[in-house]
Image (cartoon, rainbow, N blue to C red; front, side, top):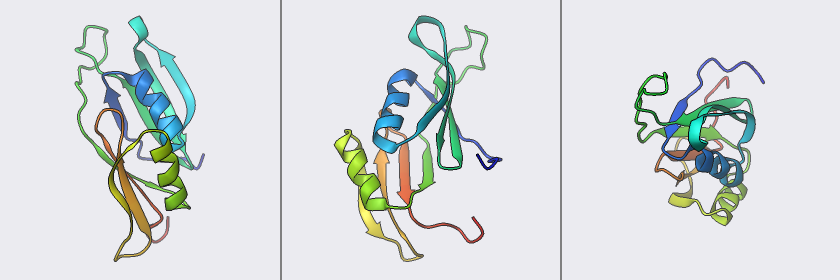
Length: 130
């Protein structure tokens, strides 16, 4: 791990299902999953290349964690082979929001929705210096 300094954190109504989806459809790797009460996820860390997202179940604060209902987010993830990644996502039931396309600023990308509607764009474009 390269030491990412920005780590998006997502809350899901069904975090366990979301983690399986992110793993199977998008290729994330489970680094750490801490179970919560009644089948919830208190905290999880998922990696993709040198990036990471943290995932947990939504909460009303009754479990001592900061209340947060979650909500839609849009994330960008760099991949080497956009078409192969797209094909994997489709084979695992991802809803494709925008099919693979060449970008005018370079590279190519596609966008898919996860199990609770967050938008994930996977692309080959790398900002200079990254």
